[in-house]
Structure formats: C-alpha cells, structure tokens
Image (cartoon, rainbow, N blue to C red; front, top):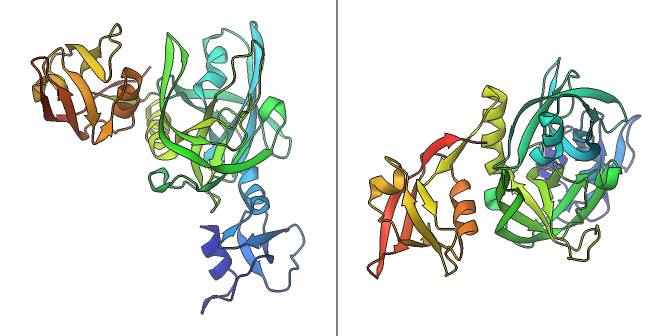
Length: 359
C-alpha cells in the first residue's frame, strides 16, 4: 500500500520516522511514492500531503488518477460517455475495464466508434474484448502500452465507514474526483433491462457518483481499487437527476474473476444454484418454482416449492437478494442454504454451485 511505500521507499529502511499530518510525499511519473524529508520534490514530481494514518484525497488523485480513463461511444442511434480504468498493460496494448452498459450500444451496432481518452487527453480507438451483462462488466483494448495499472484491493475486508474516493468522468467531465465513505455492504442492486439484467452484490457509497461515472474506480485510502462504479439511485422526479449520496459499485474481488475470464477467453461464466424462482410469489424469501436437472439444488435434495430463507447465514428477503447472493460466489463453491420446506419446517442443505455461460 502507499502508506508502506512512504515509510520504506527511498532509502528509509530502519525504524520509520514519525509521520504527522501535513508531512509531504513526492509522486513520480511512474506513480512511485517517496517520503519527502524537506517538503521539496524533484522535477516532474508532484507534492502531496500525508494526513493522519492514511494518504489524503489529493495523494490518491495524483497516484490513481492517471489510471482512470474516459470512454466516448457513438452509434447511429446516439452517443454517450462513461469511465474505465487500466487493468493490465504491456508494451503494445492495454486492457481497460468498464461497465457493459457503457459499451453495449456500440457492441450491438453495425457501425460507430468507441474512443478511450487518457488522463492526459490523448485519444485511442478501442475494441471490445468481451462483456458480461449479468455482472455489468466489459473489457476493451487499445493499442497503447505501458500505461499505469491500478493496484487491486481486497473488497472482502471492507467495513462500513471506510473512506473511499470515486474517480471518473461524470457528465463528460474527465478526471473528476469525489470522496466519501462506504455506506453499506452486500447491497442487492438490480439494473438494466429485461434482456440485459445485471445483479450486483454492491458496495454502497455516499461519494458523489453521477451519469458518466459508470465503469470508473472506487478507491480505498491506500490508493487501491476496491469497486467498479456501476449505478446510482435517483429520486423519481420525471427528469434526469444527479447524485443523492446513493452510489453502488461492483466489489473488485467479484469483478476480477469475470474480468480475467473475459481477457483469457472473450467470455465469462456465472455460478448457478440450479433453480427457477417463482416470479408471482410475493411473500418473504425466494420461492423455488422448479429445479434444473442434474444441478446443485437437485443433487442436494431441495424440493420444489421450498422457500429460501438464508444463504451462508445471510437472510434472503426476496428473489433479487437470492440471485445477487448466489452470483457473488465462484462456480464450484459449496454454500449452506436454509429453506422452508413445502411441508413446513426449515431444513439446511449443502449445495455445490454449478457453472453456466454468462450473457
């Protein structure tokens, strides 16, 4: 993390000096971070401040900002914009992660253009490597190499109240930085249309996220990406509205599996419980209408008509929550499912999740 870099990079290898609010650090062109003993940095380096036990927003913006890009999409049916971030980069090309809904119209169009604009204003045409509407993720590639990659954090270690920074291009305003905290975790969020529905086990944040932030980065206090900004809640006012402090991000641990599969094969997979839920059911929990043959639920012995009450100890109040919870796992994971049986009473089942091609 950047705090460790401030302590040990640049020849400081013994006991760390006392770091007090206002201490200065230097960010190099390669995003390395050095503690500055006198508050002065070399040519081409940026001066940032250390605040308390973590680096402040200006430091995160300086280090992570060059890895966040803007995307411009134009098709015969219209145009739009979004955000993305550098995942992998070699000498010749770069893989950039964004949301599926940012590039979907371009992917479905027979003509159009997809442009990636870097932090410095340079623009490059992009091609779609693959996309997954179930998780609202996509990977695009540009023929420009040696770009700074974002460091991945661990979204399983987040707690409510952790400070975060959102970086993206809301309303086309590139390199916009906002800050806030994690407001909630494991928030079931369903977005998209009937033929491209996304279910996200989301990180909720009050860092301002607006249209155009989609696909951008949610960064922790150490400058690591911990979420892909994907959706916002708005008030039903009959007109477009901005942030009301309810933004949602795809946890990076869940996103990474999908991203890696897309880069490796152009496609991705999703875990399956092997059930079809009853869409007419309005009670608590998620009611199983039928089972998929030879899938996990049938093999475990869960009967049709059962109502799922919890998955791995997490209460399931409705069908969307059940779907989101299942999709947060890796295919092949064994989960504990508690159901209310059609005959009455509760029973616990161990179910091995299967795998299916994602859409």
